[in-house]
Length: 580
Image 1 (cartoon, one colour):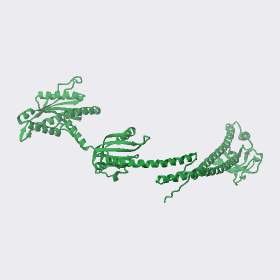
Image 2 (spheres, helix red, strand yellow):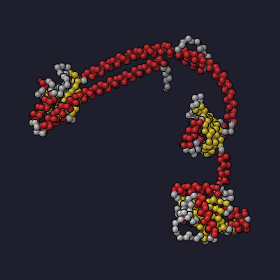
Image 3 (cartoon, one colour):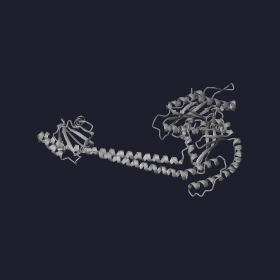
Image 4 (cartoon, helix red, strand yellow):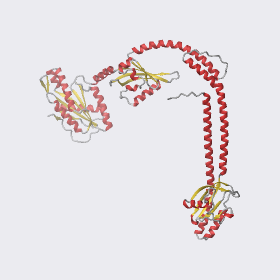
């Protein structure tokens, strides 16, 4: 169950101030705690520095003992005298005890030479035995305890750092009193609490003043505005206030006048919308309206006729429901980039209808912008152009193919050869071009008629496609001239083999209307890049080789000659191969 709580501005202001005060108090306490911790660390560092200085002095005299300069007893006495000088005031000093523990150095003379094993701190711990244990176990450490100052009997909080000097089995220590740090921390916390109480009282006063002079009039204005928005008549009194509340009341009076004018405008606007709705419903192009998040909110009947989706199936959904999957992310990124930059986009796109059919459409999108120029939605219109695409495809096919045989024509052949040469150059492959001219075809035309000749050409096209690979291009260049482009040639001899198969296949009889016709073919072969590096060079070389094949007796295959500029000394080329 959801409970709708109405919180007034006065209470909100009070809560904001309370939260801010709590945040300031929390940050202040944290900062005080950090300062206290840093002071504690600094005090501990002082003790550590003093102990390290004493250990350094002791180590110096121990080195003299180790080197034989002094006996141990003399070295220890000199070390103790040196340590006795390391005092920085009544509360900062260094003491030394051995493992028994007996005090060897201390600012209180009564402590020197005393067995302090039974000396305990305020908590009852044997203090010097704890010092000896810490230095023996880990070499050094910190101990927190309560101990009276010099010439004072009241125990106070103290932190000591101790470190063992193993060669002589000594424990060296120094401590500092930190009670003043805690006292300063407690005093700062008390002052902070007083400040928080004072701030809370001031905040309560401010909240009361705001409620009396601002929130109560605002509440009245809110109730009046709500009634005006609901179409109810409200009497708006004149006001003499010159502050913001007075301005708001005068604005409410203006709002009332605006509502009356808006009602008149709405009636006129409804009339225009009815006329626009008639056009929207009768237009042949599909119309789709989306919101700022590109969710469909309106479609017309033509949309349903073209896509198969009814309004209830697409409203609230993204237009991607129509996506065919044929366009990648970069296509849509470019579309949206232009739409954001110019406010419009139009072009050809492939979409999918409800029944799964993928169809081309001409799509135009226009952004609907507000007065600031920001897009608040989009209007898209589109039409199915499948029939137009079929006509274009048919016309393109007719422009690139031979009407009789269905093979590629000369225009398509030249374009495809140029592409194949470029690919071969990039992949460093060989490519073969076969130029061929039918032998004896004129006689078929003269004796059997042109209709029979056309049937022979149709069968020739079919036999050529049966011999070559699926990736090879077969073209009719005109009349009885044909060409084959063989890309990705593995060996030059493969082109010779294919050409010989073509010769053999076309030498077989052609049965046309129960009459047998015989023709042959002469083929010239050019290999890229040996006989040329451009489509023009290859065409010239293959054509010349074909004519040499005809001159050699027809019905054979002749390889093109290597250009003189690249020809190496070699035996004369082999004669043309006759078909068996």
